Image (cartoon, rainbow, N blue to C red):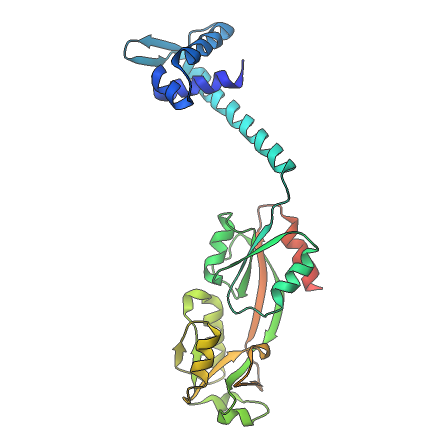
Length: 284
């Protein structure tokens, strides 16, 4: 019994017509018919009822069909395993949200110790489903992250937020900023669907501290953030210290600042040593 015979048999069973099956297989009808008859001789049973209108399975054909499908599927899996074992090493695809610390992708590459990596720019809110679907091997989530069920997470970055503002802003004259100093200031903020958990967590921290700012929603682009913060309005952003630059000033918050944390996340039900090793080395 040959795999090609089982493949021809399944095609004829699906099409219930020799000519259509041969066309689907890219072969001539006599070639398919010859192999079907050879299979019947080997098994000692007629597999099809042949009529002018087509071909239908006999009881013996009905019994063979599920076994033939399982055999062909097992053969395909075996071939795929060999291809994967002999193929060049595939790059580990990591989803990265916008606004990460500038040195974090470099640190991830160093922790990968030469293993090929490819970064894909994606909002945190879109990443968990992409990992579960297999589009990404792992992702860099802004914590706290919603919809991370089924993923293993390891925190690899944690730092406090402070107040980012125009260099000429009145609060820039202070060394440290109290929450009460922020009364009357708008908060330059982002759309919730980009990172829902982090969005809500930071606003909740503001409210607990007694500051209920009116968010000014902008796209997370450097030029837009700079233009908004330097427009002369009473507006500030909550960002880590590394996000400052020309025309801007950054000051720490005096009491219980919210934190910016990132976790590497990968599927919990799929063995994958790459992300786990990277996370362990970054944690150290």
